[in-house]
Image (cartoon, rainbow, N blue to C red; front, side, top):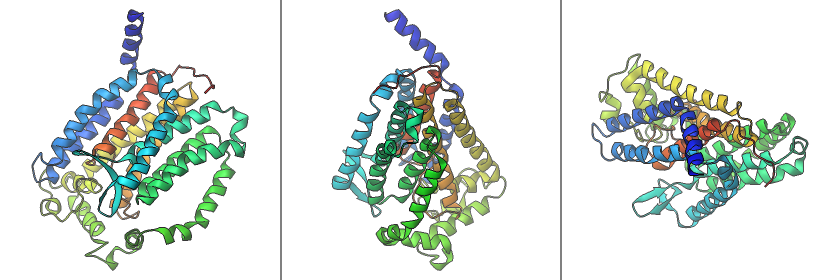
Length: 373
């Protein structure tokens, strides 16, 4: 029995897509280098912590690849309710910073439940739609539960407030709904309804969130306040030119003109120091990661694995799209980190666990899961 178990795990280990893991690992190491630069050539306080998190997470990914997919399927709802509970706990007992209550403080660790709830929603929706027959997907009553699965966390996240993550949750869910076979006209109804409640959402938005939207439309209206980050970001990106100013040579960064250059605006630091060439290489790496995740998803025999991989691929793609749109002034600043690159343990671990889910699906792509709960 032990020999068969070891053989099965050995087969899974050999089937791991090491290329995908290598690319994401490489991006994360670029992130460590940029965090070193953000601290003016020091490993403290960000680069060393990020490196430790990477080294801690990599064995978890390998373990996740070897886990029986049925266990992920079986405990998807349990994971969801744990994350939902943590979101509620963050709302009640969460640590408040920069006007948002998103973190749970456990000793010296700050955990951001909203990063993990995205994975919980992906797995729960994948499990739910896996159990439905094709004729049930078009039944509106069958869509009530999956709508609640993503809507409840989205509301809790919006209250923190975290507009960016709430939007990402909705877009990830929409992608899973679409691949599951939900009719396009139902999406149209949701979009129309969403547009109709925009004035209501505006009334519930915090003043600083409204200011961000107005600043997005015209950054120059408050160049030393709400528009400062975007203006300095554009200056840094433009000054990088084709080849960049060189590692540790970014004047906007070294002279501390770039706020949050270790988190949301880390891409700006890359553009200034490595120029258009560095930006192009990073975007190509992100494109390969997303495309390969989608490729794996559509080669899975299991509907659960297919939907889970689509969810992760969409999550990573949307994160990159929003972050780059945000720092270039094409989208409002909503505080969305760049996967594998930005400083932050919760986002880094969640991103790598997402890759682990995709790799698990890839190593079990011929697996057939029953539709029973």
